[in-house]
Length: 187
Ligand code: GDP
Ligand code: FE
Ligand code: FE
Ligand code: FE
Image 1 (cartoon, rainbow, N blue to C red):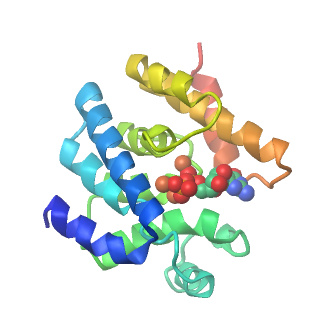
Image 2: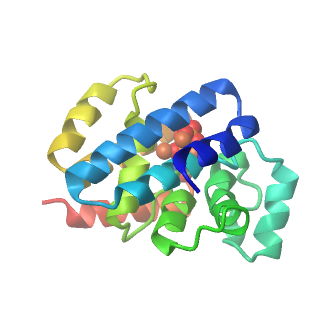
């Protein structure tokens, strides 16, 4: 399938704003793939599909978690935590994506995880800094990613965790594992 076909397939599954965000993630992910020597086509397609499950029914997503034996800890966390792993399931079952690195990039785009690949980091960071994102510090992250992908990834994870703590939200175990792994690698 080509870019236009993927875009046509995701468009009716999300509101206009989310579609525009997705285009931003796609463009940013391709730029980062070029910059860091990653496969641009993989980055493009993983980016297009990353939020495919964002508006799926929660009950249905929890059923997928049970039936497909996805991470059982996901039950009860709601759609923000479910849409990555269930998105990877849709990418595989509906779109025939078999590349494990692309599937992991979709699966872990919200929480990250320990030992992320280059493509996973590209999708995670692109999701956070795409041109339509507006939050304090986003321009600093945009500059950072041009210099060092790992440092930008680390900064993005820390930004998300600080936000979650400030807003008194629970932190998913994978998010903490991702943070700890990033800190081990910091010099
Ligand atoms: P989006 O789908 O493009 O909006 O972005 P993400 O998939 O990266 O994140 C979706 C939401 O999940 C955001 O509001 C994050 O703050 C939130 N989120 C990320 N990690 C965690 C976590 O560990 N715990 C909780 N409760 N929320 C998280
Ligand atoms: Fe998402
Ligand atoms: Fe994200
Ligand atoms: Fe997103």
